[in-house]
Amino acid sequence: MNTTRLPAVAQRPARLPPRCRTLKRGERLLEPEVYLTRLDGRAAVVKDYSRYRHTPLAPLARVLVRREARALRRLAGWRHAPALLGRIAPLALAIEYVPGIPLSQAAADSPAPVFAQLRGAVARLHAAGITHNDLHPANVLIASGGTPVLIDFASSLRAPHWLRRSPLVRQLRRGDLANVLKMQARLTGIGPGRRQRATLAEPGWVRSIRDGWKRLYRRDRRRAQD
Ligand SMILES: Nc1ncnc2c1ncn2[C@@H]1O[C@H](COP(=O)(O)OP(=O)(O)OP(=O)(O)O)[C@@H](O)[C@H]1O
Ligand SMILES: [Mg+2]
Image 1 (cartoon, rainbow, N blue to C red):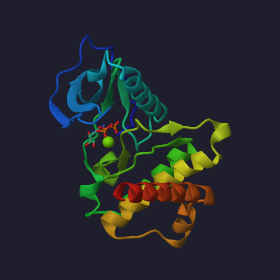
Image 2: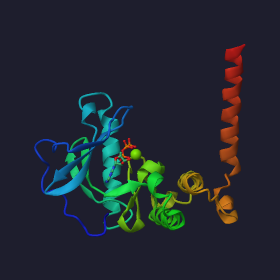
Image 3: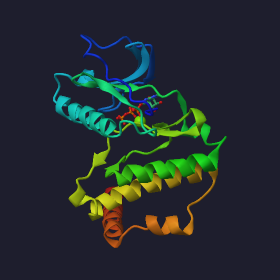
């Protein structure tokens, strides 16, 4: 966790550091290889999109790396996000290793306090103008002492001040909160309270887009079956 400021990796290593253990294979489109390594004598996680080098998807991979690095840099010193150790290659970044377990495994032992902390962490993230946009149990680690740590900021967005009250950004914040409450309901059986349900209620324009989309989809399916 990011409580003490870790020094960035001294230099870009000439080549990527050796893999100690694979944490996640990059199998789907634009998924990175995620592995555990050691950098400057400490455990680190590398997110590596290098397989996209010299392919048409390289610019998109670079955007994901840059976006995650930028979000982690902004959150430096925050205990609910890992520290960025550095961009160690054009398409790879190194992140502090958080020794913890995924929320899906931890919630059974300590449900309510973990989710109260998680809601607080997401609220603070939003207050800083950042939305995570990909909150699910594999992207929340529970570190020692039961502290939830958010990882995987590749989809995150930081809205400029003038956009923070816009319907779109509000919708993204609502999406983050809805994901937290969904995880809470699924892992602990505790559903959202009345006030939370009111916060989550979608505005009319979102419902109309969703309903319109569903109608179109059903009509196309019926046509395909005829
Ligand atoms: N800082 C970290 N400390 C410990 N484990 C981590 C860390 N970062 C990632 N992991 C482990 O690696 C897994 C994959 O990492 P991550 O979620 O960042 O990648 P991803 O889901 O493939 O990324 P993306 O959504 O950007 O395609 C996580 O679910 C977690 O188990
Ligand atoms: Mg992930």
